[in-house]
Structures are given as C-alpha cells and as structure tokens.
Amino acid sequence: MDTNDMMKKAQEMLGNVSDEQIDEYAEQLKGKTPDNMDDKVDMAADFLKDHNDK
Figure 1 (cartoon, one colour):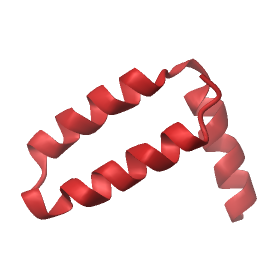
Figure 2 (cartoon, one colour):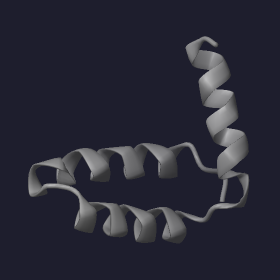
Figure 3 (cartoon, one colour):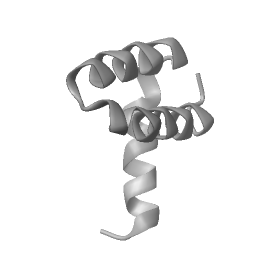
C-alpha cells in the first residue's frame, strides 16, 4: 500500500468523524502518553482536521 492509498483509506475512515471528536480523542490520548508526546499528538490531530471534510 503506497502513501496515496493510505491517505485515501484515512479519509474514508474520517468520513464520520468531526473536528471536535478528533480534538476530544487527542486530549484523551495526551492523557495516556508522556508529556513529551503532546506536541506530536497535536500535530497529528491538526493534520487530520486539515484533511477532514466535516
């Protein structure tokens, strides 16, 4: 599976997820990971929201 296929699959999976839900999940994830991972979780959440149609 190449990068384009993975992006398409991720977009399909995000089809029913709102930006607010992404933020909520990111906050939950940050509560379960070391503090030094918070910025990476935020970056991933921002990326997902940028590519989310909702």
